[in-house]
Length: 216
Length: 216
DNA sequence: AACTGTGAAAACTTTCACAGCC
DNA sequence: GGCTGTGAAAGTTTTCACAGTT
Image (cartoon, rainbow over all chains, first blue to last red; front, top):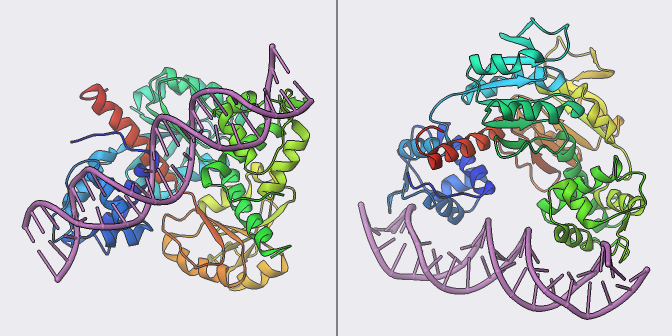
C-alpha cells in the first residue's frame, strides 16, 4: 500500500466515500465513477480522484472505480478492514447514550467495557456492557484488549483520565469533554464538542442576519 | 462590526478563544496577549492576531487584548451575545442524552422542546422538557420560538424531517444522523458523526502502525 | 466515448517579519 | 520593551485541463 500522509480533511472525505461504497446504490454495482461518488458526498469529481490517487491507482480509465476493490482498498487505508475494541470512560448522559448507540457496532466499533466514578453505577450492566470503577481502569482495559476509548467524563476529570489512558497504551481517544487535552505523544486525540458545533451554527445565522440587514 | 467572511476553521478557533476568555485564568485579568491566548488554544500567536484582525482592531499595542472587550466583541461576532432557543427532534439515545446535558444550557443554548415519533414517549417530560409528537412539529416550533434544532432521528427519517424544518424557517440544524442532508438554501447545517470521528482515529492508528512496521 | 491520473494554475490558509504604537 | 496589526512569503488544498487508457 502506497501510504502517504493525508490531511485531516482528506481522511474525512475518504470515510465518506467508504460509507457510500458500503451501502446502496453503489454497493452491488460493479463500477462507480468519481463524479457519481463525488455527487453522493458533496465533493467534486476532481477532488475524489485526487484523494484516491494519493494512495495509488484504484480506477480503470473508461469505466470508473471497481466498487468492491475500492471498498477493500479504503478499508485497508483507514484501518477499517477489522473491528476495533472500544471502551467508554464516563457512563453519564453522553457516555451512557453511546453504549446503546447501534451505529457504532454496525460500523465495526465493539463496545467492550465502560467505566464510571459513581459507586451506584459500578457493577451495573448497560446495554450488555459492564460498568467498572475507575480504580480498575488499567487492568480492565488491558484484559479486554481495548485500543480506543470514548472519553465522556466531566471536564475537570478529563485531563487526569487522559494521561492514565496514555500511560497504559491506548492508541486513540475520542474526547467529548469541552477541554483541550494534550497527554503527549502517545494516543491520537479527536474532540467532539456539541456546544462548539452549535456555536458554529450561530455564527452562520448571525452573519446571515447581518448581511440581510437587521434581523432576518 | 466589520463583518468579513471567516472560514470554518477560523470560526472554530474564535469559539475556542471565547471559551478561554470566559473562564479562568483569562477571565478576571485586564489584558491577555495573543501568545497567551494562542498557547491556551494550541494555536500560534500570529494566527490569533490574524483571526481577530479579520473583524477589526481589538488589541492595544504594548499591552495585549482587553479581556472584557474582546469577550464582548467575539460574542457579538459569533452571535453568542444572546441566548438561543433549541429543540431536540428525536428523543432516543443521543437526543435524550442531550436533553440532560448541562453544558448546552451553560453555554447559552436553551432546550425548550423535544419531539419523538414513539407514542410511548409523547407527553412525557425529560429533564424538564416536554416531548411532543411529530405531528405537532411545526406548531410547537413556532409557538416556542425555536431557532435551532438538534436532529437525532434514525437515518432513514432524517431527510424528511430536515425538509419540514427548512420549510418552517428553522435557521440552523445540528444533524447527528449519519447521512448527508441538503434541504436547500434555508437553514445552515452541521453534522456530528461519532463513528466518523472514530474512523479518523483508526486511520491515524493504522497509519502509525504501518510506519512503525507491522503492528506497533 | 468514457473516465482516470496528474502536472500546472488558482485559491486559500498559515507563518514570517517588521513598522507602528503604547 | 512589549505587543499588535498587517503586508509579503511560504505552504497547503482545491480546481482545472488534458494526455493517456480501456
